[in-house]
Image 1 (cartoon, rainbow, N blue to C red):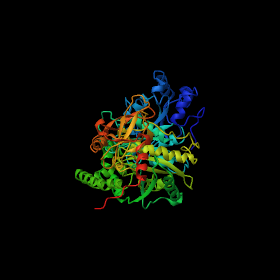
Image 2: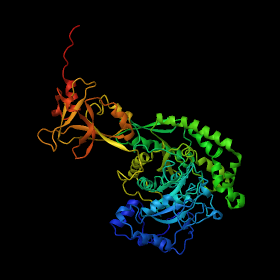
Image 3: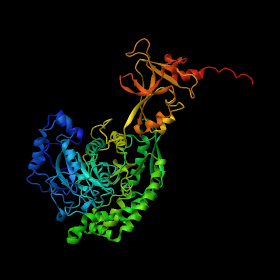
Image 4: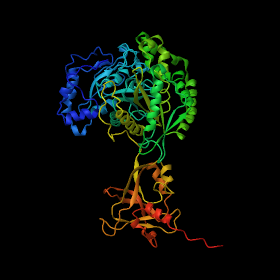
Length: 628
């Protein structure tokens, strides 16, 4: 499919849009001219759209930008698309079922937050009806074809959102994800699909598929853009939340250890499409990556516990959640519902309350087995989808072909985990092949951090953005990330340094190394007598540096705040945690020593640090032991 024509080439990423406004002097009327010349709000011949905003709608949003400070609104003038099961005030929400359509009077919470950040809604996108499907074909508005080969499916249910992003029409779009709808279309269209932890994104104004599992997802050309959009729209809004997962630290892995990447022990991918070779290439790509100096290690895992979880989604009573939305329409106008969707939802009648409780018990038993996977791995990498069927194949076998696509996606939301679908390569058949990284609930920031590294490495090898043919700008070293667990920067000076006896206390608490540096030249270091293992004491001796002060070697670590209490309990007198000034003027928490503990201690400041002192001490000949 070709990109919808524009009077001038559009920026691709959020950074491109911001640069066009800030440095290029562009005006929203120019960049959004395609929408300003639209005669009405009807969708074009492009099946990715159910509704394209008309000139009046877009013009009114542009006029509002004049009241917003550009510097404090990170999405100022940036267009985005919304899957048509998410409410946009004044635009019909159809869920790809005209008989169901209604016009909301207010935005969904996620849309409101993005509009508040300066973004402009330009249309509602097509989907598998009522978000029931992974193929992108179950819609009266037409099947959305793959952006690389129109004979193949786009993936669903968020088919339209993935398509308009892949073609560079908008830099990001919203989808939803229950069983993979925010990941499979990303994989099939060579873009990023960020699926947040369930419960982390507000769901007010989102038509449910399975209300206890659903989450709004983000499609973008880059991880940086997807992460920034999630960061802007996440957080409670006062509505009900069915899953609660506390944010985790913004990094994956264990201090000083290889990043353990779990992979299916027996992956089943479509060799006819070249997905077997693409998967082997993805494994090689992982081994070439490092994260903050950590090597990577591939760990084959048994996927059977996760597949057992996945079977509950469509073989268990969760299908009844879909029935709660469609019950009235199925009774009054069953013919208005896509036949395949109707058949799926009709299975709700096979389950009663007893079955629902039994399935819940089974899920909790399986959850215990699944959680044990994290004892041996830090992140799970799977093929986003094992195959990509043609439109003709789906038409011939709609249920079978659809079911195959959820093999590596269906279990994730039932377990409350986070996931990030990323482009990997283009297969021998010319179709994109994607991989998905999965981590425990609350790991959204950590996955985004890892995804930045992954995409940066892929772009260095020439991997393009979506179907645009453009490699795009270099990935930023840092980007706005979703919420992560609060942390404390901690400077260590002695036995907690890497390679020293107490370093394991930092490893156990999930810390990560921020910097190897020195203090300001305002300290002296002492070897404390009688400590086991040997420990130093750091003392500040001058306020502004001077002849008495020395810059002492330290390592600065980031420690999760909820681990600080247990760490404090391990610190013996005369040591404690205070505030230490670093060479760059930054103040962080760090080890200090009570003045009484320095009485009789040896001043070792001239060594410049504990490591150098211990190295010299270990070189000194030891006095012979006296005979008994």
